[in-house]
Length: 320
Image (cartoon, rainbow, N blue to C red; front, side):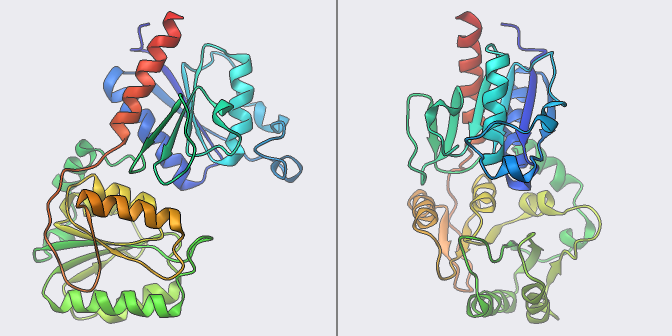
């Protein structure tokens, strides 16, 4: 099969984490073999959403789907499962891909990727330590070459601080916030240049506490205005501080080969602790105590591995 003109659809409900993972994999496939990608987002009405991922798709969403069908459809998120199943019935020649556990078993897609800390396994399942993402070496090199002056002027070592916050799995309470902020202040006192970006989950009180603690030190904190500096920070970082509530941020940092100092709040689920344990075994992660360590390691990036598996399965499907 000539895949130079391969059509790829990504299928999510628009949740940023899911959408970015799907785009990262799609872009890695295109980088290897050419093609194009179209983002498809669904917004099922409440009656349909309550039954997902097992119920039928919302007919209102289906109006956006029409031939020519894609060669590859990459989906993520429980709301996308039923739409991927619907697409496969109408286009058997489409290779369907699902990222993370679909909760309906291995029959949800032709190929499924899961992180190793999840339990799903099967002949069509690939499990890797880290999650896929869009932060390829090429993306980081381009971001580094055009980084804003405020970041370039910071002293080295430059530390990218990827701050998370409370989630459905990790409470990240006031005591945790205080511990995180104090460790950051101690790091700032050491003379490192801090590049800080909050996430969508970082509460306002936590952002204010970080800003107060770092006032007067060599630190730059993104205020949410203008272009997102995330890729610039990844590209420039000599080391990382990452909160344990985000496996995506940890995975993106691990692709750089720079030491990750992880802050672990109370209540982190066992599956995330297993993930962090795997990163520690690889030599990528140490616990954050306010001090920097320099432990280079082989970068970990699952994105090209997933893309290669998709291309192999796409070729096999074309020949069947």
